[in-house]
Structure formats: C-alpha cells, structure tokens
Image (cartoon, rainbow over the protein chains, first blue to last red):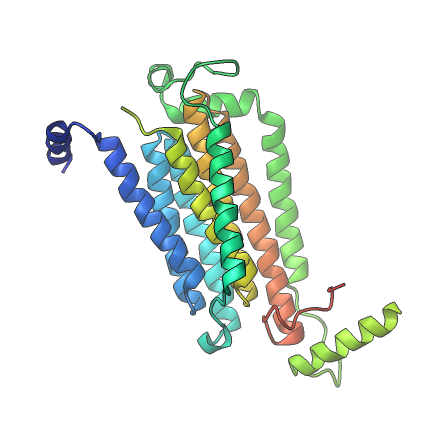
Length: 212
Length: 101
C-alpha cells in the first residue's frame, strides 16, 4: 500500500504519502463526527464516537504524537465512551424519545458564516512554517535522537509540568468522589412518585413562585 | 513534504462546528455531553498540530491534561444525568428548565 502510493505520488509529483494519509483520515473523522451528531439512536452515536476517537488517535500518530495517540485510545475511546454506553444502557433510553436536528435557514447561514470566519481567523493567525520566537528545538529528528516521543514527553511533564500533573491527579480524585455522591440513590420518601413531566412542572412552578 | 498546519486547523474547525451544532440542537442530554467530547477532541487536534509546528512537546502535554479533564467532566456529567433521570424521569432538554432564568 505504501509502495503503491509512493509510486503514484512520484508519477503525479503533487501529493506526498503524508498528505494522502491526512486526507483519508480527515474524511473519516468528518464522516464519523457527522454521524455522531446526526444519529437518532444514542448507542449509534456512542459507537460512532468510538470510531471517531480511533481515527483521531490515528491522526495523532501520523503527527508523531505517539504517546498522545495511545492515551487517546486507552482513556478516551476505552473508558469515557464505555462510561457513556453504561449510562445509556442503565437508563434504557428509547430511540424515539430523541428528536433529530432541526435547522432552519437563518441559523444554518449563521453557522456556516461563523465556521468560515473561524477558519479565516485561524489560518491568518497560524504560522506558515517559518521559524521565529517561541520555537522549540524538539523537531522530529531531535525527538528520535533524544529517545523517542514518550521519553521526551515524560521528561517535559515531570520536570516542567509536575505541578499541573499532581493537580490533575487531585482533580481525578475529586471527580470520583463527586460522581459517587451525585449518583447516589436518595432515601425513599413515602408518596414521592416519578411521573416525569408532571414532577418537572411542579418543580418549575415552585421555583418560579419561590423566586418572586 | 509534510502536511501544512492549516489543513489541521481547518479539519479541527469542522469538527468543532459539528460539536457546536450537536450541543445546540440535540434534545437529549447525553447527546449534548457527547458533542462536548467532540469539541474537546477538535481542540486536541489543534494542540498537537501546533506542537509539531513549533517543534515542542508542550502541546502534547496539554492534550494529556485535556483528556484527563474530559474524563473527569464526563464522569461528573454522567452522574448528574443519572441523578436527573432518577428525579424527573426524562432527559429532554426542552423540559429540564428548572434553572432557566
């Protein structure tokens, strides 16, 4: 596969294999992101999210960020989306309870122009590859010479970013405690029914009457 | 000839706009949380592209921290979803408006 693309690109003389990989991965990422947002079924969206995260991890690997690619698969695709699927299955959501996307024309136009604006601003602010102030010395060759991507990331993290690293571990502890406390079952109160929207209407009425 | 950084920025902007559309237009709370994960991934793509462009690894370290924060936020958000569903029996954002001003 790689030889065929190299031969093809040398014949055409225009695209390198890295660009072919980028465009293929970009098409897959956009397609799966679109399916995440546009699926009616929550489990379908979760599956498309896993696929999306795998393709994004492949894109990290193509950008020589090998450790980030591995962590993305392990943590994001392997733990976070599994948590989503657990909750979807636990709550047993019905597909017809979710509506699709309803976009009328003025909102769609605003979104399209905002997107074009973001792109223009981002490309205008980004660098075109010229070296300048703020350039590091960790080019791809330097990373390979220093001992690989994971080694360089680890050295930087545990020397320059040690304090955020410890804070992040404390944040994880906080999140664990918070999620256990929030999702705990309340003690049973006699006479309290779970009747969905009527209970919501009662709460809205009581909150608005208490606020005035 | 490497891929120019602008390609990654345009791709990440596309993914970010899809995530924004998902946050604004989905009526199920879990779908909103999944679209937030899309937003965070779009930003991750830009960070790694910038780290490659500036020849540093600080962008990749930032990506690790963003993944960590996303995990914590997903855990707490899903715990809230469970509590909301247990309390109200619905996850429709049209009806969950007790905090609405």
